Length: 103
Image 1 (cartoon, one colour):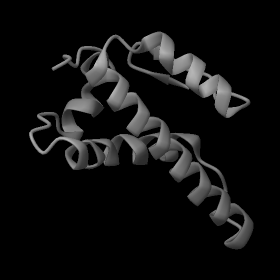
Image 2 (cartoon, helix red, strand yellow; image 1 turned 180 degrees about the vertical axis):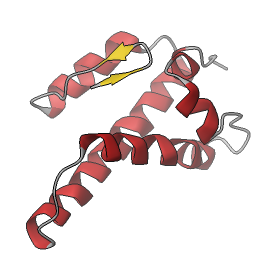
Image 3 (cartoon, rainbow, N blue to C red; image 1 turned 45 degrees about the vertical axis):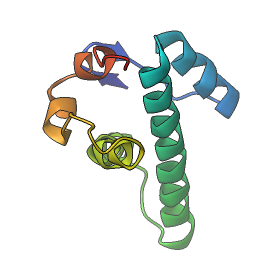
């Protein structure tokens, strides 16, 4: 999977997810962000799994990824109501996430 500067392989385990993301984290704000994002990804994967099993739908990794990015600003606002970034910011590129400042 590739998204504007970030090349990412789907990990084989949850431990690998945590390890991969911990390398990218550079402070408290990003740690909170990537924690929320990790849980969001796991939640969406669970939903997709249910669709595959119970609704006989097909897996679309790009749709899964886009859905998570679409929801991330809303999830972040539950932690910090002053969260400044929008869905549009995220869709413009990965540097938006990597450039988030710690507070």
